[in-house]
Image 1 (spheres, helix red, strand yellow):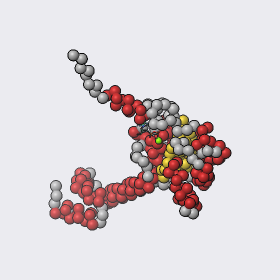
Image 2 (cartoon, rainbow, N blue to C red):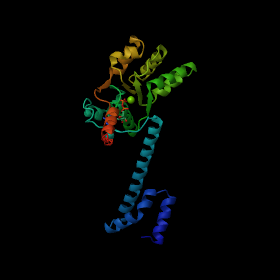
Image 3 (cartoon, protein in one colour):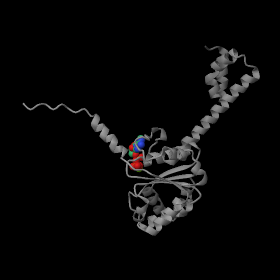
Image 4 (cartoon, rainbow, N blue to C red):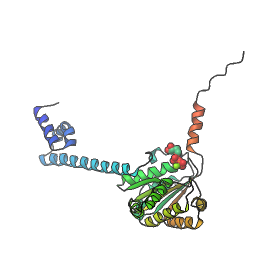
Length: 265
Ligand code: ADP
Ligand code: MG
């Protein structure tokens, strides 16, 4: 139902940017009449609603900004993770991480396991959780990170770059181990880990066991210096099992209708 007064009120709400109240005006008035609300109670409810709505919008914008800045390769949360498929993961451990408590102390997370078992998925999900908590998050691959640091060194801007990489509360470094790292890369990586040590959390994923990191970094001494810092306060999740990608392919294969074989004449 609209009346000239209701239209005028809606106009006032628009000009005063009381958008939520504007949308719900008719319902609010109707309900207030039914409940015989006093003037002060009505005003209290209406203004409270607008404040709540503005706050929620502000939070959502903030989260969206953090998510955009984090540069995730995709957006997947824990709700889309199939725990039954990967029984080697204790959901309690991941759910504890999802509370973000480790971020308060700058503790680290290591997700280890073969390809396709959900390391990147979980890393992104935990990154999204950090964004939801209003924390600055940055996602990068090990290869991308080392290229960036090498370029910064070459351009005499290493200090600046290290500072940028030390700022986020959570730095996610995906895919350590796929590409061998040269001596300079290992050195730069070590510098970054030292900078963040006990200051900001690092979440790393690796397809290699920690024992093989000496080879990944081309130097067992530097690898153990990196691991020493990463592992000092850390949750390590060892994922064993089948690749989810392969499972999906297999299932697709099973579901594909098989053409009936024509008997040879
Ligand atoms: P990894 O980083 O370990 O190689 P990914 O996280 O990239 O593996 O997983 C490969 C694909 O399979 C992604 O699309 C991911 O979302 C999906 N996936 C992996 N494990 C699961 C799971 N347990 N439940 C749902 N999706 C999964
Ligand atoms: Mg991955």
